Length: 118
Image 1: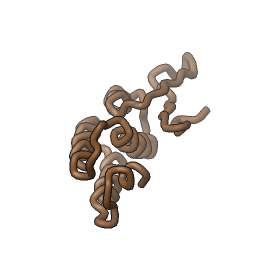
Image 2: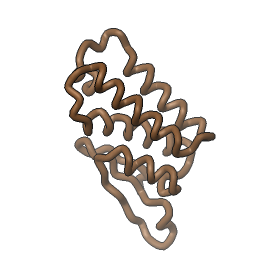
Image 3: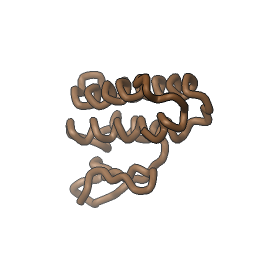
Image 4: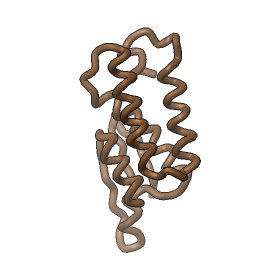
């Protein structure tokens, strides 16, 4: 049983609200769905919450139509804020989101595709 899996740009997570009755998984490419899962305790546990938030941030940059770097960074910042509101006291959540912010602000990233790749 794996809590989180990244498969070809899709996040697959164990719906922990179904335990112990059954082992059910959700697959998504939408960061908003991951945020909802964190908020509703489908994803639980400090490490899993942090990792799921980082994956959700990745999903957000692939989901956007923003073609330039500034717009993509703005979309990512919106997604990070959305994720941050899911569990305001979760330390691992904020640790992961701060790493995402730091990576996105790296001056060596020169275009939107470079940010997506990173």
